[in-house]
Every structure is written in structure tokens, then in C-alpha cells.
Image (tube, rainbow, N blue to C red; front, side, top):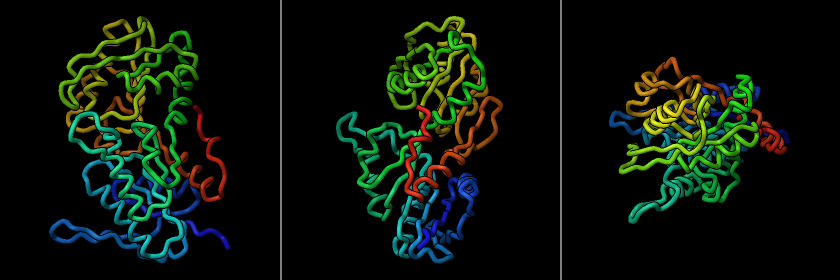
Length: 312
């Protein structure tokens, strides 16, 4: 019996969902969201999904309705007798809360994992989790993709001489990621060390590494308020860098992020479309993840390896 594959979008990333379905060679299924006057809403599949492999495509940036909508779509698919329910979540929110970093706080990314599985998710396909070990919070298969598959070819297309290229991490937490890029490209490495008093506010930032006269590329999994990133850009330019780019998978871009980026000295900020941009910015370039996700979904459906889609 042939596998029935159906794609359904959440409202947060509907355009990306359509591109993924098209890349697979299909189209989006018919799903509607009914909203009550008090703000409550109810997803409904408007076609049969009995026995189907259902791919629900929804990133979960704020507001909270996006994660709840995903949970409701999964639950509805389970109750409609879908055979497999695969959540395609290019950006998984709350991944920064992956540990107890102080007393009396929760591990919210584990809570999200529990909720997704309780709702009925049988597989997760996601990209660049804030911490790789979050995969261990799930008791179902997790296909964890990396934006390096897109970023490295883009960097190579710039034809920057290896001896002049330096990969940098804006903080010590991103050192491993930047080091992987540096080793693959045969480039240098620099690391920022930041001190914070409260979340989203950097008190001080120091740079470890030689960047004078170099083309520097900062690498991170996300850019939120852009405070740390723009401070790192300033520090690197002050150390004599020739150019400073940033590669950040998830463009959360909250608060004054767009204004900071536009007013900054950054040469270019490259993000993916795991989260749609709220507005245009002359210094932001967007690379689409749709083809990568479509190819991986094809491999998942056909029970084939996905490791060929990883550059590093």
C-alpha cells in the first residue's frame, strides 16, 4: 500500500510550509482555524487524514498561541486517525530554557517536549536547537538539521581568501559551533566573552583572538534583540577587522533589533526563513530552508538516510 503523505501549515510559517510542500512535489492540505470572539481558536482538518503520514509545519516564535496551535493540530490529527504525525518545527521556541541555571526555575524546553509527545507527535524535524542535548528530551525520533548546510556554501560563494577569514562566536556558548565552521573552512577562530546582569542586556564583552585586517564572520543559532551581536560587531571593528558578517539561523529579532541592525556597522546579517521577517532591512539577507526540509522529508518518507544533507 502506497504511503499517503499530507502537509498542513500552522499560521506562523504558512509561506515556508507552502514552499516545503512544493519542494517535496505536493501541496498544502486544507486546514482551517476558527476563532471565537474571546480569542479562543479551534483548528480543523477539512479533508480526511485517516492512515496518512501527516506533516504539520509550524515554527513556534512568540506569541504563545503558535506553540499551542501546533499542539492542537497534533491532537486533532491523532483523533482523526493519522498513522504518523510528524511535527516539522524549523524554529523550536523555549530552547534557551534547557537547564536550571539558577534556583527555582523550570526546564521549559523539556516541558515543551513532553507536551508535543503527549499531544501525539510521533517524530520531530527541526533545525539548530539552542543546545544539541535537547534532542534527549524527546522519546520519539528527532531529525536535527543544521543551517551550516546553507551557510557554508554561501560563505564559499563570497570567495574570501582562507588566510583572511576568521570565524567568531559572540559568546563562549557558541564556541563549538564557530570552531566547526573554522575547521571545515580552514579559517581562524575568535571568541567573545560577555558578562550579563540581566537577560538580553550585555554588561561587557571582550574578544579573544586576532581579527586585525580580517574578514570576520560571527556564527550563532539565533539573533533576538541583537544587543550582544551588535556589541560584538563594534568590538571586532574596533580591533581592526576589515569586514564583519553574521550568520544566525533563527531571526527572532524582537524589541529594537531591526533599528540596532540598520544603524550598526555590520556588513551583513544572514538569517534563514525559519521565522518570517517582520519587516525589511537593507542589512539582512534571508536564505530559505525549504529545499533542505523538503529533501529530508522525502528521505524520511522513503526510509532513507538524511546524513548526506549535512555539510558539517
